[in-house]
Length: 291
Image 1 (cartoon, rainbow, N blue to C red):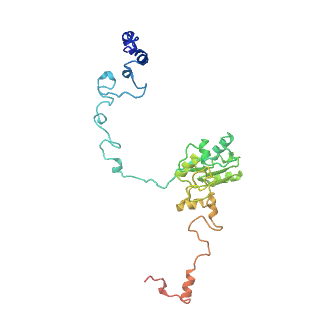
Image 2: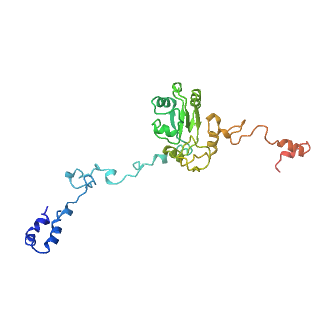
């Protein structure tokens, strides 16, 4: 590194100290303490970038000769497209594509009763509070929620703690085991967006009433969004079914079923009586004709 400016200017400053401007210029000249070539020593931090691999530059580099591609063949001489089968007729062309992918299928995250009871015994779940998918996910009883949570009955004989649990679906045996222990099961509809909001704490299925609104009108509530309701016939009929402990089962009148096309026996129109009254009680052979 070259010498500093102070030492370079020292012989000139010796005779300059007696001049009248020395008291003014000398402090400025003595303040320069940095090296003159500081720009030449600038560099990145260690590990800030990786040096580019120079291939094919001789055997000493470790990447010479074949440059890491191996010997001969298509993988060395060119590129192999994805799904290429060496030039033969693709198998899906010869044999055809078989099967299909169900676009309406859902993948539920299963949770069993013995695991929930084990988490309660360890103190990782509180049975005195409502258990939702957020509590199951936060306590690591579930490792991620996919399209919902399904409650299964493995280890039902080990269940001894009454609980109030809200899931997407539940098996008949699991519902019976929890209710025999003094608990309650509620199945509720979730969308992928509502699952994310529940896991982030922006929605709570335990306090939300059935509604089709997405935003909460009460600004004092700590939750930002309401839970959505089902729109397809299959989902509506599932959560209207009391056997599934659906949260919409209170909408089904007494004596009716969860089906949207259910008709109470005896309330249908009797067309046969009207026809007989219109024709005066007589039937002709041409009544059933179209033309």
